[in-house]
Length: 289
Ligand SMILES: Cn1cc(CCO)c2c3c(c(-c4ccccc4Cl)cc21)C(=O)NC3=O
Image (tube, rainbow, N blue to C red; front, side, top):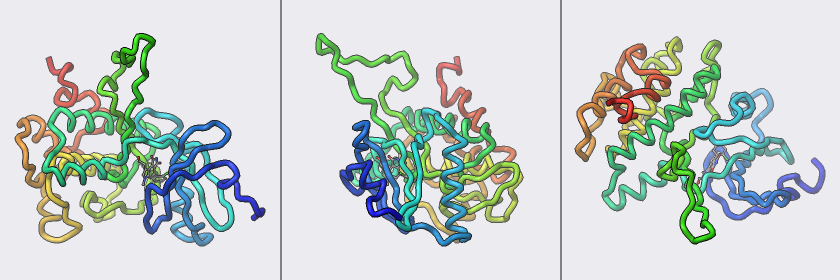
C-alpha cells in the first residue's frame, strides 16, 4: 500500500466511538467537505474466509440499498494497508442500546408513544430493505442509530423546523450495521445475535426470512420498554420462542402488547410484515379513527 493512507489523507479523526472484535469505529471529519462521518476500520479478513464474505456482504448491501431516511447512509468503502474501511453517515444521538443503558441506570423507560415511534420508523426501514429483496438478520438496539435533527435558529431567533414532516419530534431512528444482510431469495444466512434470533432460523428454515427481522424488532422494542436482559439460550430462550413477551415493567395498552406478541408468534407466517406494520392502526393512531 502507498505510504500515505487515504484514511489519514482524507479524514481528521475526532474520537473513537466504538470498539469490538469487528474493529474500531471513529467519528471523523472529511477535510474536503467538512462533514462528520462514522468510519469503521477493521482488520482485512483472510481472503476467501467467511469474514471476508461478511465484509463484502455489508458493502454490497449498502451499494444496493441506496438512500432511505431509516437506513444509515453509506458513502464509501476501500481497503488499505491490510484494513477494510467503510465510511457511513454519522448519527449524532448514539445507538438505541446507549439510550437503553442510560434509561436503565435512572429506572426510566421509553413511554408507549415513543415505543410506537421507534417501531414505526424501524418498520419503514425494514419495509425498504425487504422490498429491495434483502433481510437484515441482526436487528437489535446496538444496531439502531439515533439522529437528532439540529434545530435551525430563525432570523427572529424562533426555532425553525418543518414540523409538517413526519419527524416532527426531531428524533430519527435508523437501521445500521448491514454485516448480516443477505438476499431473501438465495440466502447465505450468517446468524445474528442469539438473543434476538427467531427459532425457525436456528432450525435453518429460511422460507420466511423477513419475518425473522420482525421477531427481532419486537424483542428490541421490549428492551426499550424496560424488560430485563434477554437470554442467549436455555429455558427462558425457548419460553419466548413459544410466543411469550418477557415481562415489561410499565403499563402498556392491551393492543400494543398484543401487537408485540403477534410479532414474536412461533409461526413466522402469523407475524405482520414490515409493510403491514407501517400501516398498522396501533402504530399509526391517526389511521385508527
Ligand atoms: C459504535 N458506533 C457508534 C456510532 C455513532 C452513534 O452515534 C456508530 C455509527 C455507525 C457504526 C457502524 C456500524 C457497523 C458498520 C459500520 C459502522 Cl460505521 C457504529 C457506530 C454508523 O454506520 N453510523 C454511526 O453513527
